[in-house]
Length: 391
Image 1 (tube, helix red, strand yellow):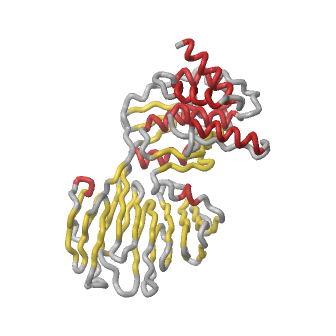
Image 2 (image 1 turned 90 degrees about the horizontal axis):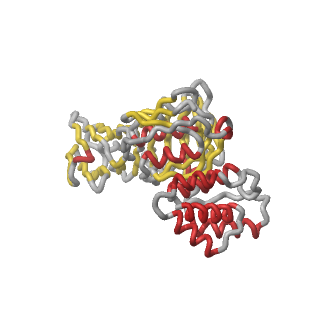
Image 3 (image 1 turned 120 degrees about the vertical axis):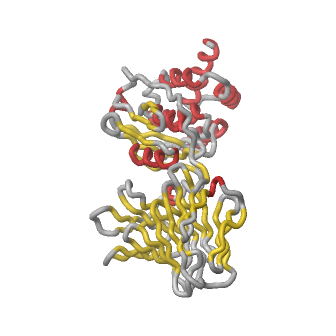
């Protein structure tokens, strides 16, 4: 093991200083993929000189996180480097890690070392969320979808309610509704689900969310009510506008793609447009959005428009990721609470950290905790509770 550690140290230092050969990169990859090296890698990486000009502390933590997770990582290089140097570094790193990136930004005691830190082992297995939801029909019938077989669930007027491959689909071949009956699809913490309305509109419902909608729309309008978060791909119908009612706001469209995030414990309600056009109304305030814009409403503030929104971050949850862009720890942990069905408690003040990158929503909670530890945020688990330590 001592010989292996020595070799790892040499190879990591060469990678860190951008002097590793192709053969050395292949050798490093092989050593990293061997068993039982994670803790050793931490120790070795911490010995790399901080004054090394090639990688900052932030970028070093980024690479280390990828190594420890065995996740692909791409390092974002400074624009001040010579183009040839950037290409060389990218080529070397791509041999090891390609496709997903992580970085960490610390602004307080994270830079002061890890003295007197005691880490409690996380013995509990906390699994990520999955496709699960409850469908409540207009007559009060409750259907637990994740334990129900595919097939017809109910007949409501002209509409047939079908479960098909972990989604609910409404099929109405007779046109508009004879009578308006409302159903509700709800996801718990740790759940997500897809819904296709009778007009062909597709809805992806995030964890801890619900949507109330008619089994068939009438001739004049298409209106649904949302709590939590959902992504909509609205079927075009020029004669019937589509409206989402959420937190006292109305989102009006004809046919478009947009995301609505309206959790009660978040700081703001956000409607983000990806395609088409959207009008957002709150009392006397009204804004129109173009693709790439976001309507943002904070408590006690006026409705405002944000330009050049990170659309990939906005819909990452739908695509199976936590996408972070200078995301504060508290915001990240609220996402963790909803997806892993846990409670997050802070032993002291909330550490002042920001995170960036992608984390698969299929990851075990221990992978997320490992990422926090790289940024010197330590925790322990008690049942379904994660306690962030005051260290």
